[in-house]
Image (cartoon, rainbow, N blue to C red; front, side):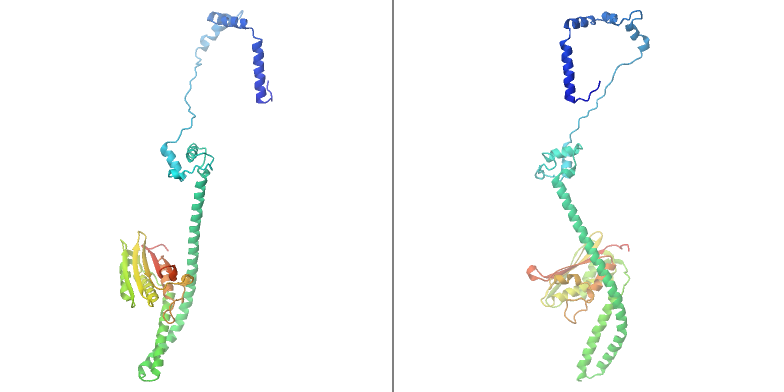
Length: 390
């Protein structure tokens, strides 16, 4: 008979029934009954059924001789094993607990100590993420990685904008240069003829000389425009980067008060580059560095370095530097910090285009504030050793 009573009520009812039966038990009759079944004969007499075969003999007849009533048991240990010392150390290392000082035992995970938490992790009763310092550290790493990813994305976006700007300017410059080049050539030719035919003591000689000089300058500007607009095909061949740096320094003697030298920190100096174009890049950077040091002198260092995948040119000067507000403009066409008539603002634009055609990267760091430290500019050009897929 079932009941819906609570557990303790049911236990109470069973106990009460047992006490009642014990109270009414005839102990003498119980002893007689126990004596009755002490031996087999009494047992057989008890099982004998009147008018039938002895029930005891029937139970032990051959019919039941094949029955195996034995039972076998095997060990099934349900005890949870404890981790070994090495396993515990590995779990603590994953939690960031390398030294004893790292085990804060803050209790935020619900365990008294970090080691108890590690044991629970081994048993599958807890998770690593339950450790608050570990979760905070993981979040910090995630934020840092996101920040790096955001910075790289911003740099890539800026590079894309710069490339689009240069492409548009290149198309415009090409059209203007070709249109201006022909009439400029005529002006320049007749100016030289007049200057050659004019006596040096004539009042017109000075004016003609000025016309010739300015026309020559216009010719150089147009040539730079064509260089900037022209998408030259990169011809890659094995090139020694040390020779490029040394040759560029030899071709450009330093101005008065400026010292220049090259350093090479590269084991394998050979890379697949367009030698002429990269020489133009290094020459442009050296020329800009000299211009930044003409007023007060200084030192120029051209260094080469590299690893298994890239080579680098670093051109560093101790000149006046570039103001921070102008750093993002240095690769724009026609932007220059040189004095009027000293530059066209196309040198770095051409340099940028050449580096990008080589699938490389160019970075500029500069300081123009003497109160913030030594002034100067460092330009780093990084180029792949081997041809990159387009």
